[in-house]
Length: 433
Image 1: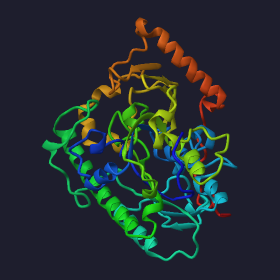
Image 2 (image 1 turned 120 degrees about the vertical axis):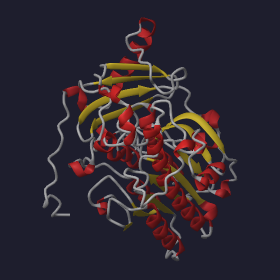
Image 3 (image 1 turned 90 degrees about the horizontal axis):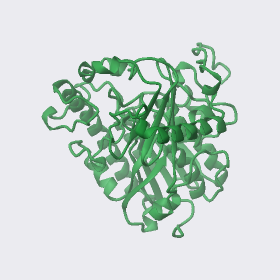
Image 4 (image 1 turned 180 degrees about the horizontal axis):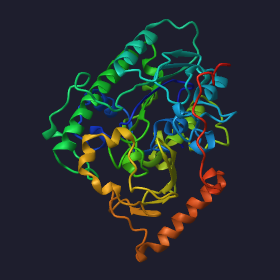
């Protein structure tokens, strides 16, 4: 049984763009992130945490609703016209009945108008809030005296580490000292690209350090849970915009309130952004709505043995800057991917197509297979597709069947054919808001 904990702690949720698991605590020792390193040393690090989608808006839609993108309606980018379906509740709305006061500082990617997302306070309506400005505003917010004793839910979103990473904004690292993951070519172009990425991570890390210092200096230090995560994988070819782990695995680090006196550590259980909503509702003292797609990790946070040993995750992509419908199932052992439309093996968004790393990856232009199967323990970079291998036909069929069951059980519109994009927003489309 989980340990009893003090009721209704404050909650700070920090989320950034396009980081994936590019941190030393996830096996990338060259990444310059001393503040996040210290934070990880004080926290519970989830080793197998995943977004539901490899794109900004759909991924965040699951983080902030506990529903798959095709359930909540955000199957593409918000600035392309996608909106939450009527009746979908966001995290601040789920927590409000339990007495939580909510505030947003910085980035959100769920609606063109931050004010419709259910927060009691919204600071900054733009889509490009830089990390240091978010840190500055957070310092001010935490220093202000509170008019009531209600617990708070504070969401902090940063533009970093989204491309581009210009030299005038970010100091690049030494290209010869960076880590190059197995799915990328190890050459001068890639190393130079990663070196500039490190510069953006360094600035994000500095901002997170300021935020944590301000929190620790406040009266809320001992009774606040801090969650740090990102939307999806890093902005490199064969990562962001794909359903490979490089596209959907995320940093997920939770520092419990210090008054819980819970020892730091690591958790290996499969975890999803979908789990945040039911966890926080349970943390607030409520009963998570039955329609939420995730599982509370509150028990696992305290005791790894309470994790679900048969957990399986479902991943999806529909629209980005082109229509590219993909669905997948991931277990602790294997991943099965189904590509619903022909196209290049790895369709590249414009920022990835124009990246220096792209120059060494012409092989991505080959045709994509209809099905993909990877044994993750033997092939963690998912480089060897076994979908056509006779020796693994039984596993392929089993995972395909389980994916089909999920698609039908959740009424995924992909079953009815192509998913039509909404009209591009017109200038007066939100005139009534």
